Length: 277
Image 1 (cartoon, rainbow, N blue to C red):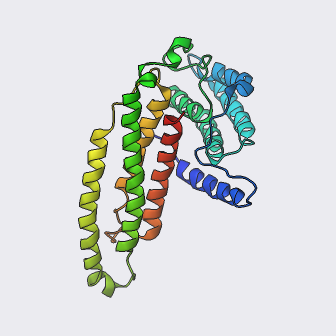
Image 2: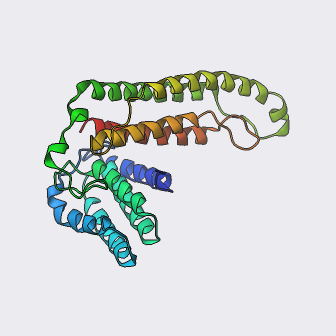
Image 3: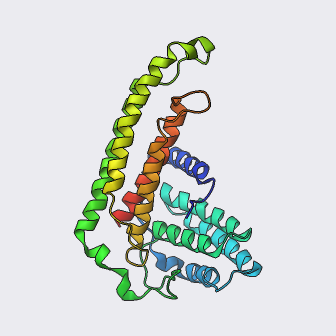
């Protein structure tokens, strides 16, 4: 499933806003804040899910989904935490996509992803593959098997380390110093060679971690690990983009690698949030 379009812009905006709010010194707003207790939102969630899980989403259902997602987004946005703020933006975006006719599975899977990120688990949630999630399914072998959690955590922490070291390496290698043709034809070749050598080693490490990533459980086995797995895959994809240039430039500018590292860090923060729940 493709991630929601334009979410990068929303994510950057939300993180910038959260950083500004956190700078006041009166409280610390964490990107990986605690999940919300869904009990206070049960009426809104169940009303929304009655619309989302209809057999077929007609125009009336889509309008209702859009309105209900917007209303719920407004309520959770009052809670502390940058992560909640990001998900509230994604709720509104998903409502817009539902209204313009995106397919049912797209709407349902993205709602389940957002719900797992925002709220604690609840036996009364509805899922795409079952009319109601059985209470006994709230903890499965994926949740109780410490080895699987340990495997996820190991890959996650290695990716954290890669981001930290990768940023330092990028700063050390640097960006193109000039946009002139003379620089491009001469000194720039040395920079390209340095980045190419680094990119080969970078890709090798990413490929190794990708192979080491545990199999993705289904969202019925463990919704948290299901979405953590997807966030880890997305983080690896973003990190692969770090050494890529644009147009005639074969190496990235600082703004480009900052963007890729920032997107990877957000996916890793989401994965931490899921694994630590």
